Length: 246
Image 1 (tube, one colour):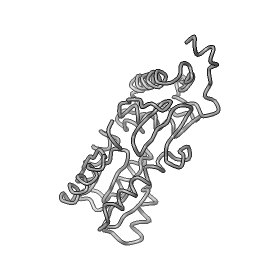
Image 2 (cartoon, rainbow, N blue to C red):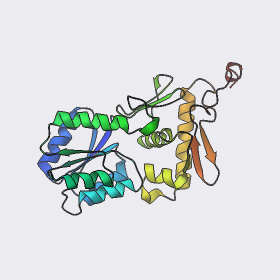
Image 3 (cartoon, rainbow, N blue to C red):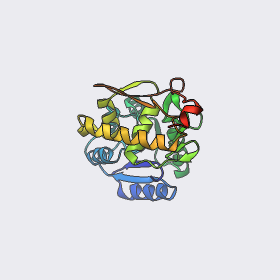
Image 4 (tube, one colour):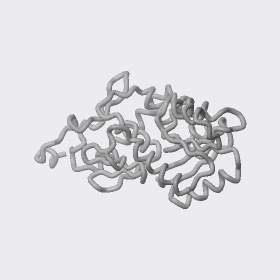
């Protein structure tokens, strides 16, 4: 994986390309869309880590894009708009946006806002740096890295998203439909066999990187319902004598 993935939704091509070039030089993986419909196609295809959204789109109001994303995901959204009216800001924030910048803005300020919003994206389970931790597992959403016992683990983008959703809901039962919507989109809402494959891959990769047996019971299957990742208290520690035998 590269750095965090950003989706820029902006109908003015010159502004969009300039922003994409600036952010690409700073290590972000950038996707672009010039309309609301294209934004949703890009969103469903790539599940970016953060969306930069212009409200004045040619086909639909940007507020509708926010509502559509918020139907199945908590992905951070920063509004970039020339609309300076306080009512527009309030409407965007109440629809689910995380921050708002009025054009014109300094690109360095935007980069600082992006990093701050990414740090908050882990929710209440994240630490002060925005990292999600569980036992030897650490997920850093700003660097888009996963480490186990301090060593990096290579995950596919979907495996990373799946782990991020689970770590943001430690100890909570997540239904299959909710996980599929959050990671793959509405089109995959019934692909439960697909989810089963990815959960098993995630279990194997994390367990292989951890001390023997230390992640036993990390992700539990609730038959017919979904999956639950352990929390810090319930993650079972395997005694050293047993771990050596595994």
